[in-house]
Length: 116
Image (cartoon, rainbow, N blue to C red; front, top):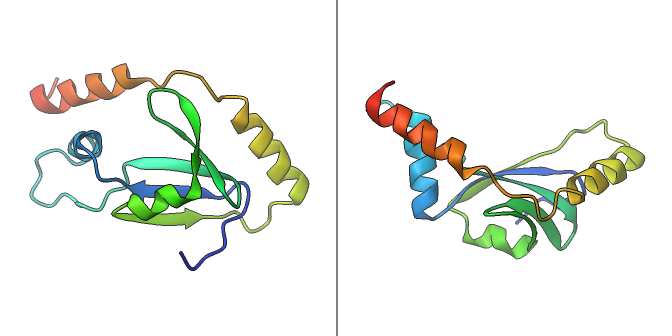
């Protein structure tokens, strides 16, 4: 990783998992023109060693998790102040333990399969 991560950075990632394949399918459908590099996961940097993400629940994850990704892209708001970074991280950390909404993903998959 060449870019130094900062608190509040958003990381878009293409993961290596069956769930990522389902997300890609839901996003791209069966179109032959689908972009196979669509990002399937999003994380936010808490500090230089930790990110926050959502799987079954919102949780903390080590930054080293990025080494398992097919690819990732760092999004940084350049005009953010340190106070805004701290507020963003605090608000996001308050979500730790909240359940992730897999039911919506399942419904989107059904919609894609049956074109409802």
